Length: 150
Image 1 (cartoon, rainbow, N blue to C red):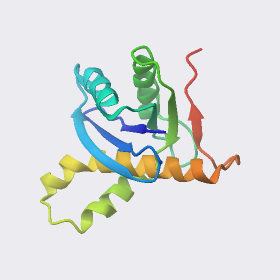
Image 2: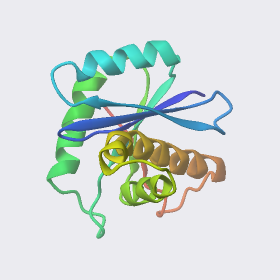
Image 3: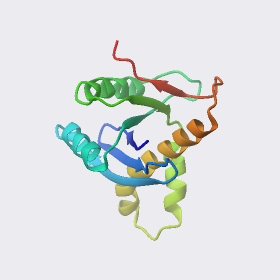
Image 4: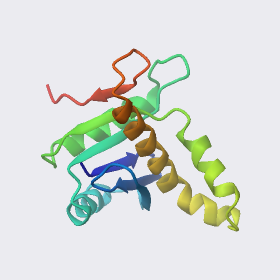
């Protein structure tokens, strides 16, 4: 299945996608989180032929949800009204750290890294989601959650 991962942020939103075999993830782009964000995401869903969306849910280290998690859920609820493919949440707690580690070896300026960071973070979220999916863990350490529109 082809997934689109979204690392939603107040200013910037990272997008990444995987191949149909769910083995290769690729950072796509960083979109500005403004009035055109939903149109941008819809365009990417069509272009990439995404069959489902994974949204990083920023949980606190104690598994509670803070203000950004609430904003992310509100964003997902609005997105749900615009698409007819499944949306799933996935714990993104350490995705930014993983993304920063991946960018360390690249010869980029600080500004260049910042421009790519959110898309690389979305790819890290998607990789972790796919790994969990492959392992088919049903334990409580599996922080995958389906979005229910009810």
